[in-house]
Image (cartoon, rainbow, N blue to C red; front, side):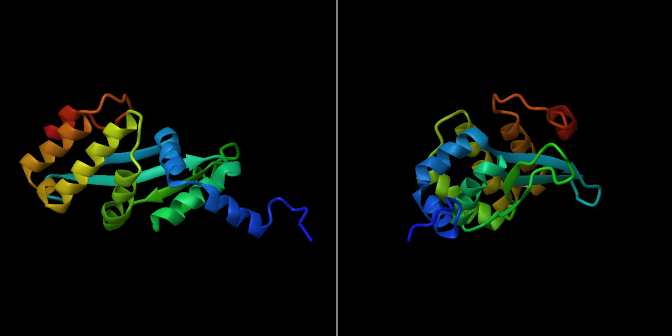
Length: 168
């Protein structure tokens, strides 16, 4: 007997399996963010911490896409995007762990490439991860290289810190 419930566990699992890796890459092209940011840290020699994270968000009706991407990547966690908001009910998949970023996320998007200007953000993200892996972000020249890379993309964002402040 067939279930009348289109949202049954079996149907949800089938929906996840039907989402192709190419679709997940394209979805990330539209909704994802390869984030490299900076945080003031007076306890560090250069007074700055380099932050690397991957985010992709979706409305509750598309949460299954985020779940499928999380499953394919084999890492990250899902949470409400703005848990305290009464209006924003979106969900976000976040990957912060640098080892997972390097070993799981990067290979996925190298195999299933992005096709928009987000591809440039991804390349910068990968180069910054490589510099961090080499410990170069802890040197003045390496940190400058990270800052130059981050500010090299054409995407206009509301960056919290200016390039001049970071390099001063």
